[in-house]
Image (tube, rainbow, N blue to C red; front, side):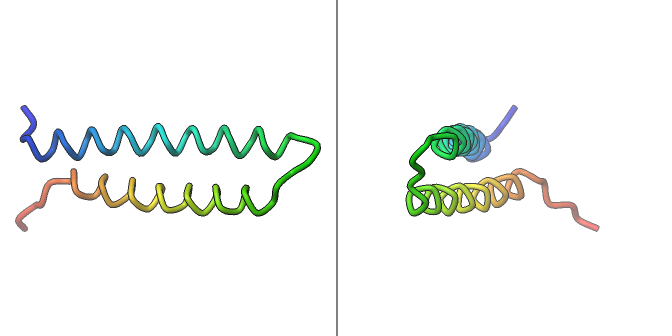
Amino acid sequence: MFTDNEELVRQRLYELQLEHRALDDMIQRMADEIYVDQLKIRRLKKRKLELKDMIARLHSELIPDLDA
């Protein structure tokens, strides 16, 4: 059904989404702590944004090209 390349893209997409969710949970837990390491939270948020961009690029790769 899917080509090998599509399957690889879907697998990578799944992995990135898992990492994105894990970072979201980690950031939330850290923000709820009494002593907050703002620098670490900033770095995690930056990584989360990078993952979001990568996920968006992979999603666009899965959209078929339409010949108009």
